[in-house]
Length: 163
Image (cartoon, rainbow, N blue to C red; front, side, top):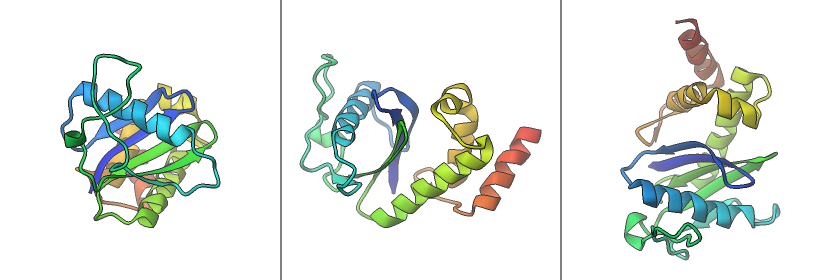
């Protein structure tokens, strides 16, 4: 199951945040800070998969402290991400999901965004966040993948724009 989908820039500013399981706002913010700290420092030649059982996370009121309570994430949660230009596309998934399948899903998501925005950029994510959420909702619903066909995704988004 997909636990969350995050997009943030190189500075760690979230551009899309979607959690499919209930977490407090403090835990969500700590998660975003921790994940950004982990993936932004990794060189491009390393794999795009991280497990969370090596990283503790705790939500604190101190914004400089970036760890998450171990009970908020299962030890089998994995971070799968891709870095495109200035954006990181991150999926948090459990052990039932295939890492390569999720990398493919990230590629489908980016290609769907490219079709909607004709070469998507960070400003599109800022000014058209509702469309970004709609594209994501066509692909993932309640943490489960529902559509991967780019033509179907694009036509559903185009139809929603017409309404």
